[in-house]
Amino acid sequence: MTRSEARSGVRVGSDPDSLREEVVRELRIERIRQAQDEESWIMGLKKYLIGEVRDLTQEEAKMFGSIAMNYEVDQLDLLFYCSTSKETAASR
Image (cartoon, rainbow, N blue to C red; front, side, top):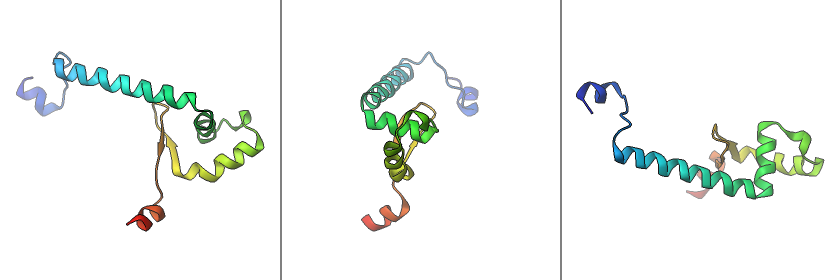
C-alpha cells in the first residue's frame, strides 16, 4: 500500500491478510444468519421488527411487541440484542 492510498483510506484488496479477514468475516456472518434462521422465535421477531406482522398470529405479535424494544435487525438481516439504559444502569 502506498502512502497516498493509506492516507486516502483506500483499501487494497490484494493483501492476503485482509482478504483472509474478509472471507472469515463473511463466513461468520453467514453462520450467524443461518443459526438465527433456524430458530422460529428469532424469525418471528425479525418479521415483527421489519413490519411483516401479517404472517404472525395475534398472540405472537403481542409477545414480540413486548420484547421488541430490546432488539434490532441490521442491514445484513442479523438480529442484535440492545439492552436498554435502565437495564445497563441497574447492572452496575
